[in-house]
Image (cartoon, rainbow, N blue to C red):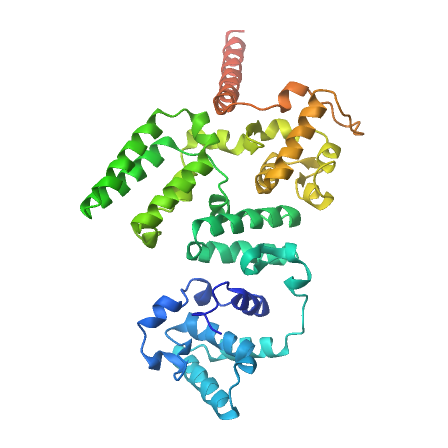
Length: 405
């Protein structure tokens, strides 16, 4: 196995974990995949007979050294074949000036002790269907975030979203900061109407130039409807919009140009660049079909969340002895639908006085923790700015009075 056949990246994951800190040229490089390999001559591979272990640059040579060290014993090479492949890898390493790095990764993999396998705990997989992205601890969660940022668009949109949501869940459990690409692919953000309409029209123009008039016309209609939607409707239907755009991109082939000519649907839908929307996005938390204020939820007792969520997940929401609105948002977004609905019902029962929790340090005003509209969140953010302005005005007035005295 090498980078051209390691579709789940499970073996590469083990190589990176063995390295600890992989070389910068590997982190910033791009590995040869099955499609890339088709265009390469036999001389580009360490195993020319079977076209295995590409040696096209430093990143691929380092990765191939790791793949060879990890899988050569399973391939069935004769001693002579093994020596020839190893020799080719080392010659390439000398040419690229990375001989020490190559020998280091080979030694680390050869001497690496056996570790717990994800097969022991199926819930450890962030990509369960393909047995990929295993996360057992904080280090694994950090690595999952880094790895996903680099390889996200090698996966279809449904699989990409599943992996991202699971990485968010594991990151919340282990108190790890979620990477921006993970957040976007998980659908954690707010659809910006102008950005969305602009990108749909850009796609329509491209399809017009290709002669795909019918689909281009549909995209123009779609963009017009988006312009008429309320903020609340956009937020509620963001997952459906994601599926619609991703589906059209796959049908028209535009998904092949993600990161080159077109933005993927998550980067179009969950754009949070405009400063005017920043506080709204940070405070808006979708849960069970409604939108909640993260700030209001963070004022709820910790014991209430522990009625529904595992203790380690609630621990990941804490900061300086209090529930952090930001960490709470990440945790809630990562929840699966049944857990999200259960938590919503529990919060409603608490604010309605149906249930109680043993937490004397919290005084909760029931209305503050209920569902809100996006417009209300925006008004709340704006009112905060107005309060600050009023405070500044009072200070100025006070200074003037002092001068008069």
